[in-house]
Image 1 (tube, rainbow, N blue to C red):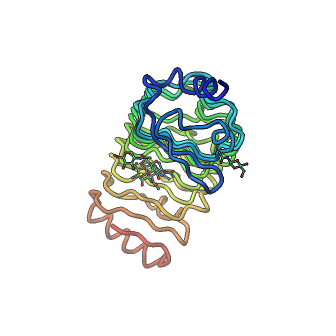
Image 2: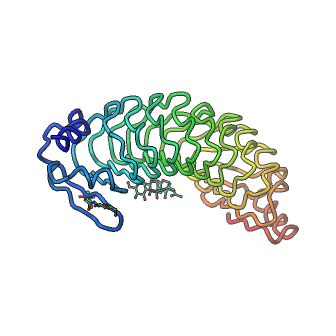
Image 3: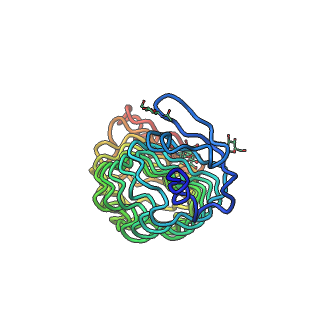
Amino acid sequence: MYLYAVLFSVFTSILADLSKISGYVKNGTAKYPVITVQDVNINTLTDCSVIVLTNNTIPILDTDDFPELPQLEELALMNNGLAEMKPECFRKLSKLKHLYLTQNKLRKISSRILEGLPSLEILNLSENKIVEIVYGAFSDLPSLKMVNLSKNKIPSVTAEWFTHCDKLKSLNLSFNRLVSIADGSFRNVGSLKSLYLDTNSIRTVGEKAFSDLQALERLDLAFNEIEEIAGNTFKGLENLKMIKLLGNKLVCLYEDVLNSLNDDAVVYLMGNQLSKDCREVIKKFKIDRPTIQIFY
Ligand SMILES: *[C@@H]1O[C@H](CO)[C@@H](O)[C@H](O)[C@H]1NC(C)=O
Ligand SMILES: *[C@@H]1O[C@H](CO)[C@@H](O)[C@H](O)[C@H]1NC(C)=O
Ligand SMILES: *[C@@H]1O[C@H](CO)[C@@H](O)[C@H](O)[C@H]1NC(C)=O
Ligand SMILES: *[C@@H]1O[C@H](CO)[C@@H](O)[C@H](O)[C@H]1NC(C)=O
Ligand SMILES: *[C@@H]1O[C@H](CO)[C@@H](O)[C@H](O)[C@H]1NC(C)=O
């Protein structure tokens, strides 16, 4: 039977027990529960815009596990014990916009896993065990707007993850194991507006770490181990409105840093070890530039 053949090709490699799978699919506004694989009928699949297969057991996704699903815009595979994805496992999902892979066991994002997803806008990989992301892992995703890599074990960030992601607006790398941010780390994602690097172990931040981010509005560096911010770190970032530096080891912010802030900037410095002199400097600075808000 065609129905069975298709379902078999979708799930054969990924499900130990074909009879047990729960979740739902959506066709237009109608929502159909999936209790067993046999419940999914082929018309629903090819017409459906949403497939939610959360809370099942899908340890591996093989190449072409997903057949052509021309209407599919959202695929949720959260909490499935997913540990491995083979290259091109999603490549026939040309309309896919949202891919949720949170709460799995992924350790590595290899090349070509995300190949063939021209419409992908939101990629949520938070709460995995990612330690390695290969060069080009997020390349050629022309619609990508948001990547969520929070709550993984990522030790460093590199510009080579991304190329031709000209629409990326938000990158969440909080709760990882970052120890430093090198110059040029974000040179291929110049459209970023929000960058979350909080709750890592960052000690050093290159003076040109963010200099390519001309569109940047929010930068979260809270709860790291930063002792010093070099004078030109935020220079020329004309859209930067919010800088969170709370919970670091800063003794002060250099005057060059203060002077480079935009008039509408809000800076959070609570939970640092600001010296008495520093507090005086900031107090004076706030009188000179009253529109800037600094909390310390
Ligand atoms: C899904 O929606 C399409 C278009 O509205 C319709 O033709 C099709 O019969 C529906 N499929 C199911 C299984 O309801
Ligand atoms: C998955 O399991 C969690 C925790 O039990 C539950 O809150 C959530 O609603 C489930 N999601 C789906 C889509 O079944
Ligand atoms: C990322 O996934 C989590 C579920 O683990 C969800 O709560 C969150 O809303 C997702 N974020 C986005 C922006 O989709
Ligand atoms: C990222 O994922 C986390 C945890 O799953 C969630 O709380 C958050 O809302 C997500 N969204 C963004 C934009 O990072
Ligand atoms: C980024 O991820 C963390 C951890 O999952 C979450 O708490 C935070 O809300 C996320 N940031 C945004 C702006 O969604």
